[in-house]
Amino acid sequence: MKLYVKTWCPWCVAAREWLDAHAYKYELVDVEANRMDYDEMIRFSGQGKTPTLLMPDGKMLPDFGTDELVVFLGKHGITP
Image 1 (cartoon, one colour):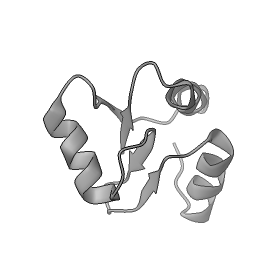
Image 2: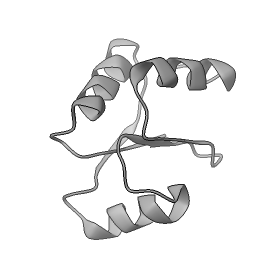
Image 3: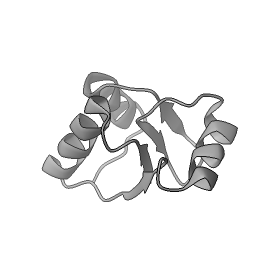
Image 4: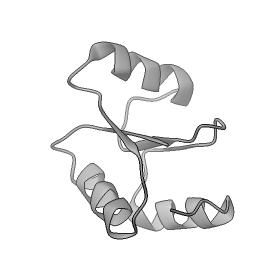
C-alpha cells in the first residue's frame, strides 16, 4: 500500500503513527517532495488532500482521519 502525505499535515502524522503502531507496511510518498507524485495522487483520487491511501488493487481512501482508516481497513479485510 502507498500512503501519500504532506509531512507537516497532522492527519498524515496520525495516520503514519497508527499504521506503524499496528505493524502495517506501507510505502510513504511525500507529495511535496515530488510534483509527479502529487499529480499522480490527484489523478487517481480526484483531489489534492492528504493523507490518501492507495492499495495495490486500486482501493483508495482519500483525505481521512484515523477513525475512517480503521473502518476502511476492516471493511476490506486489510491486515498487517
